[in-house]
Image (cartoon, rainbow, N blue to C red; front, side, top):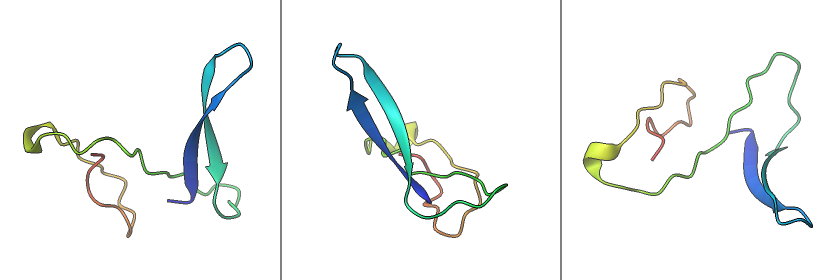
Length: 60
């Protein structure tokens, strides 16, 4: 992944998901990040089809 996600809490208490680049991202380059879902049950696994070399093949 070339990005990371954080939750930003504003003064009013509103939560926003912020995506931050870990490296310089070129024009046209896909933005990727780890969804960091909980482990869950084997039967609940969601397949990831992104095809990235570093992909775990699932989103949880």
